[in-house]
Image (cartoon, rainbow, N blue to C red; front, side, top):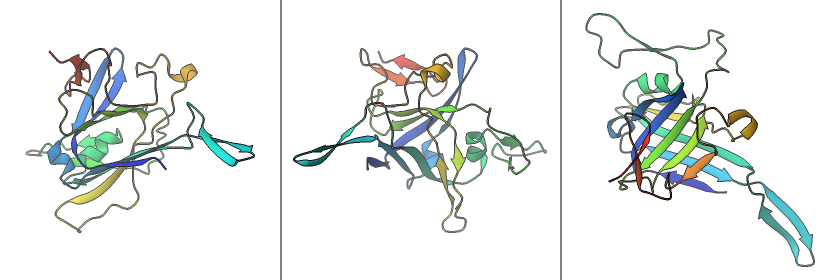
Length: 204
């Protein structure tokens, strides 16, 4: 199984495309904590062939037997989870801090048309995009085993649920025309993701 765990994260950037621009929010080092781990499994479907030498397996290009990704991080508040689920209600009472508010669910709301995020995991020591990992279309959900009281923060696993690219469905949605990317966003010039605009800018 092609499982990879990453514990050296600079930040995780969530990009949502609407109209002609990206809206962006990030999990910064203070949000992630030192014990954060990003896990992903990109396993191709295999084709089996019988021969006189026995059975051989080879990957079928463009197919997936498994495609999954998640981020486990220490959350001091639930705001980031609410933003990931696109279901955050900020508090408006006098003196309410930025992170005050609520995430609520179970009201029967249908979230099927809520769209998705491009999620970019940035490596710790790269000033370009060589260490970037991008899942181009994700519909996040939280794991069902939130741990409270085991440390000073709450341990939360955010499952990203990558969507496999389908040209007939996704070619005009404004997101990259691929399912995932490991490494440089542009192979002809050095670029770096601008965490404010959500656009890859050339590094001068």
